[in-house]
Image (cartoon, rainbow over all chains, first blue to last red; front, side):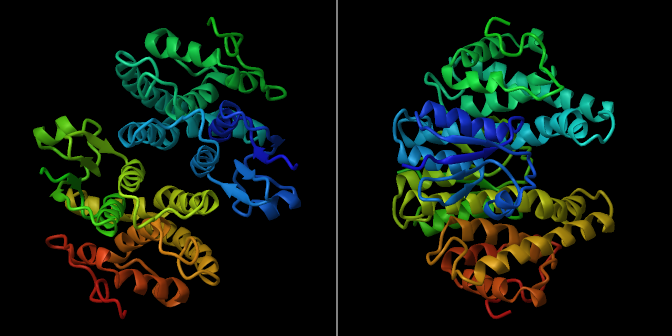
Length: 224
Length: 224
């Protein structure tokens, strides 16, 4: 049997989301590490748009876009259910996923990764402190919204762990890697993230390292 | 029986997408026209994030995010099937939806709507021609990708009309309203869009008008 293959960048929140879902669903998969813009010819053929994550399924087809991939995986492997047990629950999960994948990424994670990681990888100079300050300001607004949700919910979409938690933690873990999470002012989110860090599906993510750019000491520690 | 209600902005591609899906699935719905940032108190209570589309379902719950809403509608009304008949087809449909809703919107539609419609609505001066030129340049790249797909497919995701067609046509119809579609250089896309314009689900979209800003003559004409 041929294992599916995932082309991924360890510092892409969308790749992290797919990796966690693969693990939560118990799907074995070969991980192939690529930069966000892969250069190898064999990869470019598989991934014309040049963007990871791309999943090569066991019949050899290439699937792209993190949400299309995780919906596909849930479509095939029905349990455990990460979307919700009825249409209204699934709508709430998908609303939150769109918030984290879309708005939070565009407002916050994209700038922080560009300024702190891509510039460093590509030797394009120092982070722009004005861009980082603006991203951190918008991050506080997003965390305020998360605090409000988590005041009444154990997990983001309700009482059960869901894809909303995976999507949020994928963004937040990238921001936390470079030390930009204001943990002291977000107590409910901090407790939620400690629960996330304790999940076996999240451990491989927390043990990834960029050569030459280690994270803060607290990064992989569930008691932070 | 209480009809569901959709709060929408006629010039939002995401609202257009939900309206077409409601019609394709045969769901009756009250349409309530709002600006993209609604100001009325009763709406603000329902829509804390201030963004449309928001669907109030028949039990009074508010659902947000266009993709969460259309997945919910398909979840409840199974036929006609707009996603695909197996997991691989659904993955391809969702990949394309993410492309149009995500990349094409961020690269093209967002700037064109901001410069030509929001600035005009809010009396914020003339469109920035450099921003528009950059958006039009990126639009050509997206149309090249669509031409390649439509060289071998009758609809974007394959042989059957799908949510990918709805998502693409929702972006393109907004761009076409303000006259920015380069139809002469995109023959396959033009023929595909003529098929879209002929669908009954798309007619109400094409008959929406902004007071004081009519579209070009060809806009609502299937033979353009």
